[in-house]
Image 1 (cartoon, helix red, strand yellow):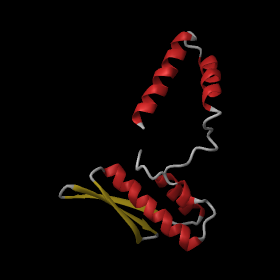
Image 2 (spheres, one colour):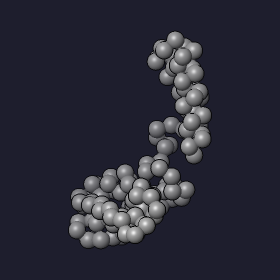
Image 3 (cartoon, rainbow, N blue to C red):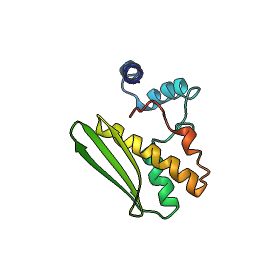
Image 4 (cartoon, one colour):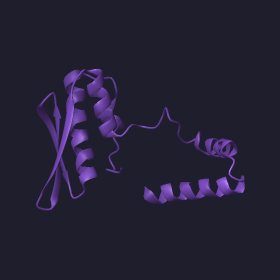
Length: 127
């Protein structure tokens, strides 16, 4: 959530000022705080990133198209020219995430991916 990101940003800024703008020391402190919680290896990828990585591994071309219809943003995802998923939302980015989640679920079933795609997708629709 945004509030949590704001808190982390404030703590990092306070430590940065307190350590007299020493980036190496800042990294040591922040890394010590965050590593028990999350590391780069345990951080799940965003659905759109996962989609592009999966398709790249399979040699497939991904095209994402956006448009607005009345008060809804619509996003369609094409793989090798074939429509495989569509997402809608009031927000363009959320429509894109919804479409990417649907595309990942379909691709996961069709190619038997071992990426664990469906379980890793953030259900909170956050960016």
